Length: 246
Image (cartoon, rainbow, N blue to C red; front, side, top):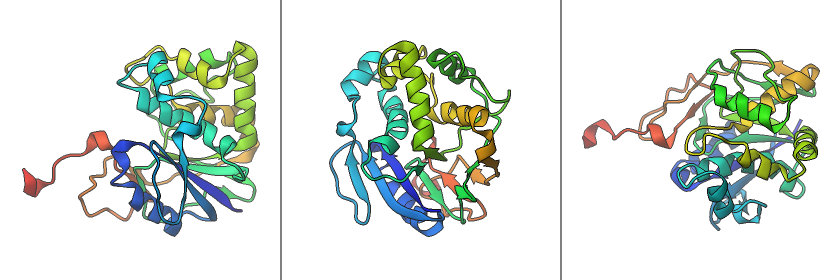
């Protein structure tokens, strides 16, 4: 089964997104098109670049509803939730990949009409409190399970279900609710992957297969990678100076 891949790109990951894109082409199974939703106009060879300004939420609006410090982080989350629905012609199933992810082994996200999900056990309670405020039925599938794993397949119909429920309950657009219900305005107060993972596990469990991937969240962009991992995440905030530059 084919998938489209969507990569949200902010200013801190311009130096790594090329490696991300190349690795998606090489290692992610069944990719049709790659879309990059970029924070500014740009051209990237071989991919479709979508301007972030086309989305219904502006940076100014996100700052007003959260904070200058965390606005970019919340924008990226909303981009992931909205992009599959807003990109004309996008396939029903889109794999969302963080721009600082680089794959090193073969990875599937769909098989036999099933969503292939990963999970972890690093639970951050404010994410679940926020989720519950979006809609009373948005509860954790299981305690001590988290769906935050840097890349996940999103289904457009299921995204529509989530947004429809939230908008019907709050009587305003989903993105406004998402931001207004964040109480940790200058911290980590919401998680798009958590919302989607637990909604699907509770409401579409028969369509999911849990399969573990081996990955590291501590990649250094200057280091030779350990290719035993399926992927490595090179978080900007976790970067350290190369040893020979100290």
